[in-house]
Image 1 (tube, rainbow, N blue to C red):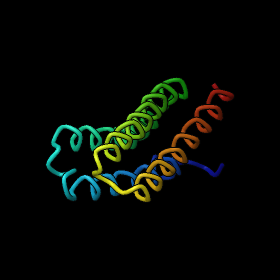
Image 2: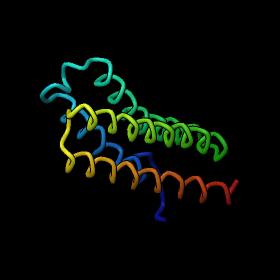
Image 3: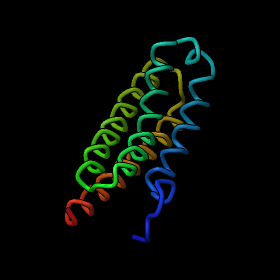
Image 4: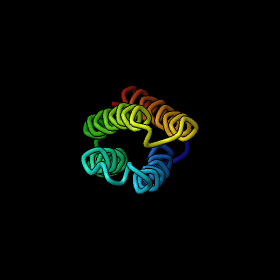
Length: 122
């Protein structure tokens, strides 16, 4: 793991930023864009992923950073659940579901790896 000087250096944040962009795009298409509750919920969850990584990093203690990383991790799981709703309602295609779900899984693993790393240095 290279030196992390700012939250933008964190790979999970970078991938999370990509996830936010993709969530915004898919939720602005077809019937998805008219399901205001799901659209806003999945967007808020996506924003929460990167916001909690940034806020936790800014706290400057491993204990607080870990706490915010767990919140971020929970938001990733929330997106995964909401993606199931989106595919069940035919708002997104299977290929897009798989792509986004895999991105979520990758981010989730990165966040848990960071938590494990920080836990050994607390």
